[in-house]
Length: 216
Image (cartoon, rainbow, N blue to C red; front, side, top):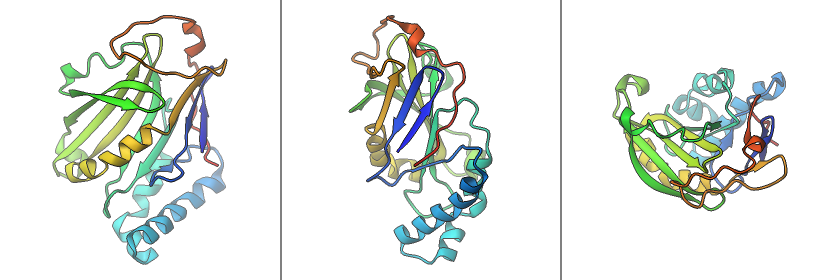
């Protein structure tokens, strides 16, 4: 399980029992060094191949690039390989200003309802991605928005080949059911109506210094 804390909010993700792995955006050099080997070993067991074959199917450079990248205000990030290959499904969670998803349709995203057991009613936006982002294959990227009116939780699904994205759909739904956001008072974030605007104690949701969480 991972707890990623901003200045006044805590995001919890429990990937146990799923195929997702938490990306360790941490200053702990030893943890960063051991994580790629852990991922490749897990993939080898999952795919029924040797460790070397897993490294060929999911290049270590791809795995290592995830932990070397600057998370840039991301509260937490998870990754899954639904099918053997270079391209994983990567999801980053962050807080945004209320109404943070309103311009997505103008940017070419199609909207559909999305419900999380813990977060409530949200909206999932998807669009075709530029092919150069994933090696000239047909690709999709997505954004899932849970907008409560005084705070917005955003899950960004990074560009992935179309076949990979579609294969990951059940795992994405299962992932969102494990996510929980609480404020400094321990109150759960939940959206009952994605179109509602409710402003109550909005200062409790301000995030001034978001940081990635360490996995247990």
